Length: 220
Image 1 (cartoon, rainbow, N blue to C red):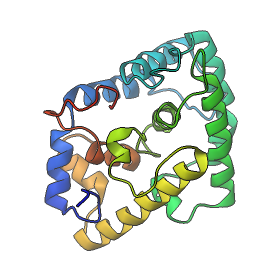
Image 2: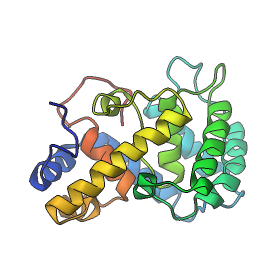
Image 3: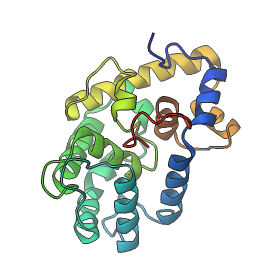
Image 4: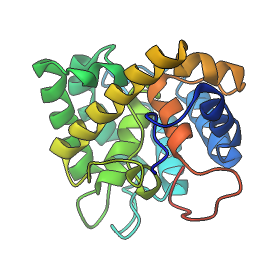
C-alpha cells in the first residue's frame, strides 16, 4: 500500500516530518533566509537571490542530465519573467488545487513554460526542475517538488504541466480528507515537529526522503 495522506495518521505524519532528511531542511532554511525580503511577484530579483536559487537548485540536482543550470544572471532574468504569473498566483496555495480557478491554472501554465525554458543550459527543464523552482519561488505554498520519491506516492505520472496540476489536485483532495479526519493541519504538525513550513513544503517533507534513506540524491 502506498504511503499517502489517505493512509497516514497524524502521529505518522508528525514522525515523517521529524525524520525528513536534515540536510534538505538546512537548504530550505538557507533559502528562506536569503530570500526573506524578496517578493517574487515583483520583477526586481537581486543577484544574491539568483545565486542562492542556483546553489539550492544545484544541490537538489534539479537539472540533472539537462546540461546543468544557467548562470545567475540568466536565472535572474528567468525569475524576473516569472513575476507576472506569480502575481496571478497571488496567495493561492496547494489547497487551492482541489478546485483551481482558471486564473490559477493559466498562471501555473505560464510559470511552467518560463521555468521549463529558462532553467537549464542545454535542454528544456524536466518536471523535477520546474516543480522544484515553483516550490522555491512560492516559498513552500505550492508543492511538493515532483521527483521520483514523490512520484512513487502518486497515482498520476507527472510528465508536463497538465499532469502536474492534476497531481496537485490529487494531493490537495487527500490533504482535505486527512485534515478533516485527523482534526489538525499539516502546518500545525510541522510546528510540533519544530520544522515550521507552508503547506506545500510540509507535503514535500511528508513524501520526501527520510534521514536514513539514500535512495536518490536528487531529492530534497
